Amino acid sequence: MNAVRCEGVVQIYKAQDVEVVALRDVDLVVDEGETVALLGPSGAGKTTLLWLLAGLLRPSAGRVRVAGADLAALDQRGLDRLRATQLGVLLQNPSRNLLPYLDAGQNVAFAQRGARRDRRRARELLDRVGLAARTVAGRMSGGEQQRLAMAVALANRPRLLLADEPTSQLDAANAQAVIELIRQAAREEGTTAVVVTHDVAVSEALGRTVTIRDGRVGAEGLRGEEFVVVGREGTVQIPPEYHHLLPPGSRARIEPLEDGVAVRRAEP
Ligand SMILES: Nc1ncnc2c1ncn2[C@@H]1O[C@H](COP(=O)(O)OP(=O)(O)O)[C@@H](O)[C@H]1O
Ligand SMILES: [Mg+2]
Image (tube, rainbow, N blue to C red):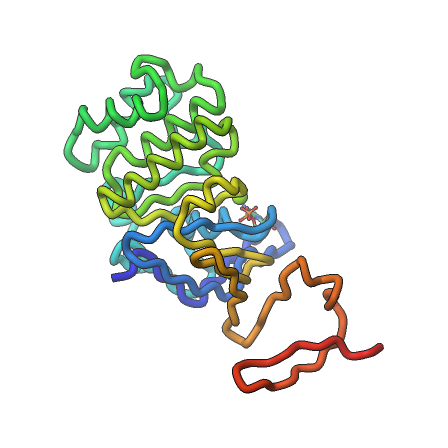
């Protein structure tokens, strides 16, 4: 079964009288147990995609299936239940994942409310991210909050972990601890992970990369090789490192080959 299946997902934000198309026709399948790094420049739509997968946002069009459920078929209670039992979510702003007046141990315990309370697991997670159980979340630094947010996201042994830039405020050693937690969850619990990141250490530790550019899946990396992804209408994004050969806006000729096509710049 697929842990994630997006079909033709479109997300349009409406602010006053301007519309922002954040995602256009995104197709994405992630298998159970896969670990995926979601890459792409700022504003590409990564956070939007993560919010859609977490059921925190309903898509303007298209279908989103997560952990066996069609999110459009769930009401608010169904979504809450799915999040409490199947998903571990770490949002981009670390403090938004935490209850600030509770201590670290209480935050992890709260995350376990949808399932069996597991004190050993809670202790182990806090230990692995190097935090004391009695420190109050609201008094922690940004980096400490980010480490606690990862412990909270994994507290329930989720089927699917969704994390948005989980190491953005961490030094290399703390980032490594977080990476190890993600890999351990995948190995030992079969947790599928979709992790938005700019951190090479994170993307290299995960099994596959998916690059979003301008609201579309532009490229995928698998076992060290990078592929462009042909989109719904046959769209292909020329990777930025080749923009000097074929600049955006230039005219090109498509030449058929036996096993694909060549895209050649037409002389002006
Ligand atoms: N709540 C919102 N209202 C209007 N526009 C938004 C909102 N959230 C994001 N956007 C816009 O949608 C696009 C994608 O944003 P986002 O998903 O945050 O990208 P990323 O996480 O890749 O940086 C950007 O152009 C951003 O300005
Ligand atoms: Mg973002």
